Length: 640
Image 1: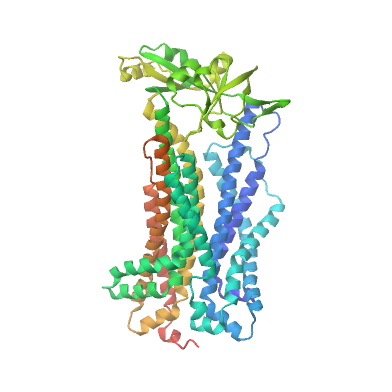
Image 2 (image 1 turned 90 degrees about the vertical axis):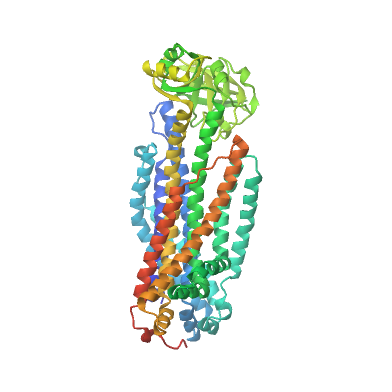
């Protein structure tokens, strides 16, 4: 019977099927890539092994986020889709109960439909996964990660994973809706009264309030926190909990907002019909607005955090760097930079192909999988860096000591008293005299003196030299002299800082853009499905409107207007979630940097708004035109 229902009512299940297939494809592709990012190949040099290990960690982190987001959205969107689909079939299910079917029979039917969807979605997702793998490898390649070094191959065990994910997500999504549908009295479902007409179910109340409380707490915490990282983490919490809370409580919020918006529609006959649909179709409007709330909250919130932190990194870099000019070159050019007339200080920072070991009392030294190691002149570093250490003193930094940089905040214990550096043929043990705090932008893990590094290694190492201009000398004059001597890429401090942030931001935007795009695809599938199902299930209602004098074009236009109003409400509420998140991030940046820093991705906001409106308008128009194709008289009949 489940198979027959699926064949007869397949249009109701298209959105859920696509969501399951996409979730399975993402899980399969992520598992394949993670499995391929194993250990560095044998025979690689220590520097190559460290670089590959770092790259493989980045690959695993990106794929892990993709898997988490894919599974979260799969369960969330599919459960919402099934809930709406089952609700729209309440009269059909009530007739089955009146025909003799028990509650257990009804649950078995609906769970059986979920199993059918899970199996079909698993098969489709397994095929789609081969395409998704290529897309993920392309993304990794654009991020300068070694996609060509990954051992990507399809294993038979992935079929078991695909089936488990597909069936598990489908059954999890349908189980709650099936249980709720089986408990509704048949006559109430036929007349749409009592429990059948109740939109705010106990589950919605529990989920809505359960997510609203931490969302409000996170919003307050992000505004009162003096720590930038805490504000960002609380911003992430606001995005997820706030989106879910508003989505679950939307039956309470959407009608009120719709009533206010609907006042503008009253002068028009078509607008008045649309306003009536908004007032009477609370469940339908809430189901359509819900995914849009998640879409805007998730995509704009995540991208806004990223762009704001990129802007904050630019400000922080300029605040902590004492200099006017930065030269990007190799270490061989440092002496020429220092000898340029007008240069008072030239502090060179060279990135080394080095390996770091962490000495441990009574045990062998522990090698770090990867570490960014830079070599500096201690005196020049102190003269051009305004970053107070968490522990220790930079004044103790000399040619015989090391400093743990901002990147070591999470990778090395602050109690680490010494490090062992291996670079070229040199192995040196250096005491740690200071530990720098974590910064917004990326920073080195270990800072060592240039005096302990072989000159041949320094000459080839990528180097950034911060230049302080002598008093009474024009910055422009020194910059022109450096450019004329062809020592490397010469920029003023602001341009260099902005370029560093742009490069890092481009990488982050690519990753976060892919993840946010994933959330957008899920949400749009759900919106399209909700609009299409909602309009197509209103054939009798639309026919009654036509019988009472409305033309077919007016009825379709009213359905489109109603959908657009709901879309606007969903975008507005999603914007509230994103704005709450970003205001907390702005406050955290102000606490850390002394100035408020916020960068809203307005082009993304406009693109989401316009895209959502176009998609919803087209979907509702097509569904409305299709639903009004039969003669109205053939659809207007007694309900029982």
